Image 1 (tube, rainbow over the protein chains, first blue to last red):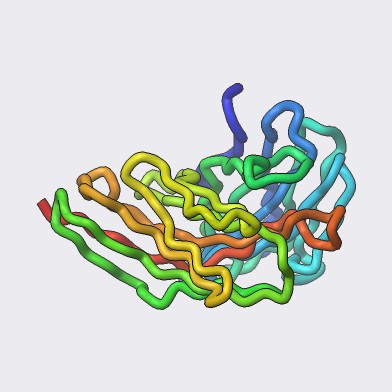
Image 2 (cartoon, chains in turn green, cyan; image 1 turned 45 degrees about the vertical axis):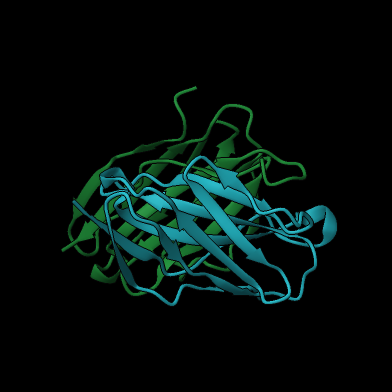
Length: 116
Length: 119
């Protein structure tokens, strides 16, 4: 398997524009997570899905952020309108359901978003 | 809510020496998992080692080992025979035992420790 695939790897956009980040999880994984990494706040969970259903979106900063998972192999994170404070690295991760530490999360390479 | 604390923002070690990175956590749960992830400059998050809370034996993966003290809620990472390729950010992470036991599948991360390896 190619692992978790995110696109784009880098995105530079102007304030006020819509930004869409994409993620393809590992085939067969039940869970998909979106994390944001900044210097100030570290790695924080934005939202996660189980079998394409959002389970916990309490980390989504505000209504400008939305995430969807239309099928088991694709998810998007959209920011509209974007603001400079949204600049960060956004990670997608996926994992298998079940008990045990071996259901660890596998991460994509992240999307570095810069809003100018 | 669970929290994870890494008290050392930066650490350095000489090549071939041993270094220990600290991590403490706070939880009221009895069953959970702990992880150390490595993030090199490439940005990729790589799992280094994992520990199940119900196991008393400390996990070991080659040059990496942990000292898990459940009562003290401490989970330190020891890197032996440090190599230049070990230079990275290291993140300690906590995960509940899962939704079937009332927990969450999400990972809670510490702020990270930047490890420098000097030749």
